[in-house]
Length: 80
Image 1 (cartoon, rainbow, N blue to C red):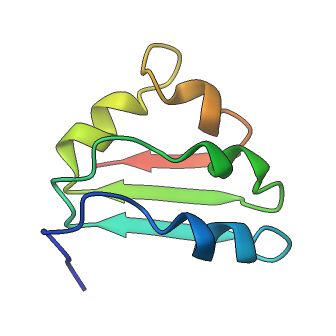
Image 2: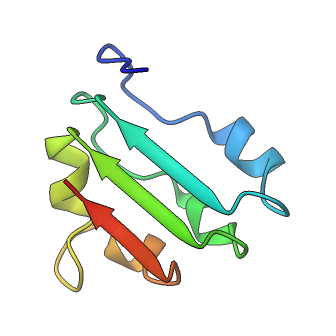
């Protein structure tokens, strides 16, 4: 489900899922501009997909994106 008006990811939900979240898909949220700091604490996260979120995708580009340091521990990252 796309939520285009969303401007920030729900940090409380992410923090509450720190011990179990393995796949996180963010789709159709063009207004989200950055990854929250708490994403770094999701050590079980194996898959991150960012689809149709151009601002966020740009910030998550491997090696050069401003948010890359927050997500570089995730084995599989798909930007689209």
